[in-house]
Length: 224
Image 1 (cartoon, rainbow, N blue to C red):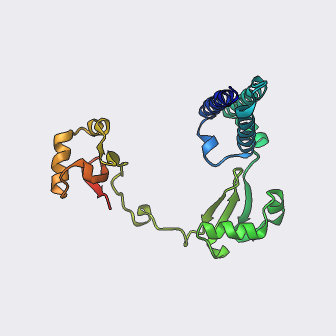
Image 2 (tube, rainbow, N blue to C red):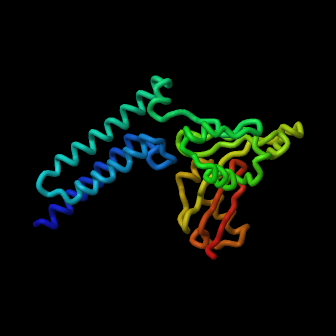
Image 3 (cartoon, rainbow, N blue to C red):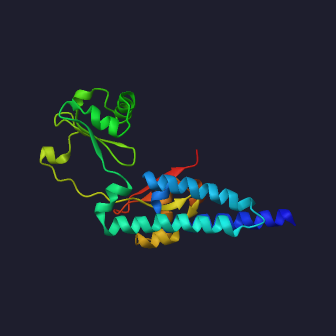
């Protein structure tokens, strides 16, 4: 009987946790800001308690709902009143600009010099002379603007206007044809069968992944 109760409270905990995550949105599974981080940890801890609480499961359940409501309310508040974001999430901090490192700003961001150097290397900057501006974002990530002669060349620098690119759509995944995606691209099974034959495949079951672009060019990856 007790095992059954644990199973029920665990299912309840998982269901409520899923619901709260959906309400709070993708920020809970992306790079978190300060309050999202605290909320995520707290709700997860309460959910674990709810899963094994047999006597009074309503207490942790209510606590989860309260934390979820606070997070949801703050997201709405920061959306309607942008000025409140600096109080909720803090603001970006300029760490380096025009060849100068700002020690006071590093202390304000609680960022050690060694950590700053590591983050620069992770972004591909091993020489600080290649950096025009470095900004420490409120979510803990570093954004870098390279000096003008070190940034990657783009088509605009060469007065080129390349055609726009479009995302490829999966038409075959793990040997299974995705009919809905086929119809969305304006093609059918007969057309896909022809494409398979032209690339040496007898059927979709031999294809691990099939991609189709807006020009109806198909890229097929077989099982290796």
